[in-house]
Image 1 (cartoon, rainbow, N blue to C red):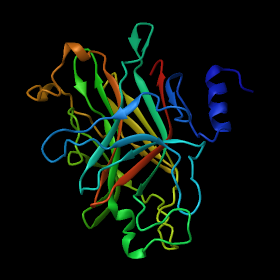
Image 2 (cartoon, rainbow, N blue to C red):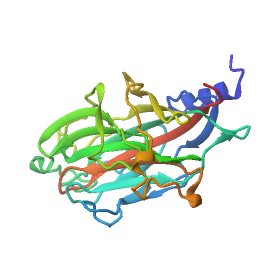
Image 3 (cartoon, helix red, strand yellow):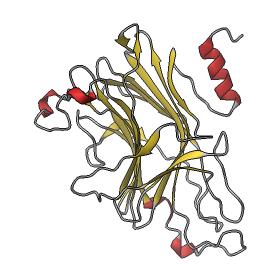
Image 4 (cartoon, rainbow, N blue to C red):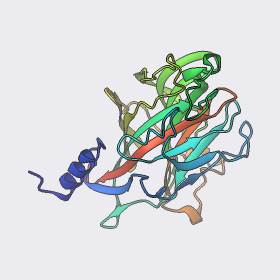
Length: 298
């Protein structure tokens, strides 16, 4: 029997095809069916990254030969698209402040999302029987990786817990999960491997003249923001214990202006997602929906 608000919300999400198990308190529930829910583009502006902004928009995911795929649980998803330049990175960010309960911040947080990733379809003519040129379909290796991160500023420190799926690097397949071990804003080079984090994600190769096919995946990241530690991570059937993946305190990095406590961003709490291309073509990341929830007590 559904006897709590949480159970009611969870049951409603499941009925709409969203496989979420939120903690005690919902912080945000973004479905992207009618709006972007406050997510917008945020580009890293530093050496090695172009200052141009990538595309952040809602998408019905236009399909080859027929209208659109839609999302796993509806018509629209949030789409991130890089520029067509090797190594280009596009971020989406939602600017929030730390959720509180009885005047105290929730100690534990959970982020859940349903996502898919693809190269840009090329060599196609929409709504015709003209198939793509197979030589142009370079496939999975065009997506270098994608991340789920937080930018958090508590009363003492600013720190960035984050998980990355390292997909390909140049001509080398990686297919493994990584974490940000430092208390500073991660770039794609700073992540370290999660022990036992190898995982092949479903990629339906374009061997039948369809340039890309969405395969939706479930992702969950649990954090203890009171102790600034990782707890657990899940993607589909892979569950990883992150308790040995430490996030070093930001204090040693106070010579880096990005980790110096700033009075104008006290209680900052920004979820961030990103995608990076591995070739001179655009890479796409789609979020069907995203839920952040909190636990009232440890």
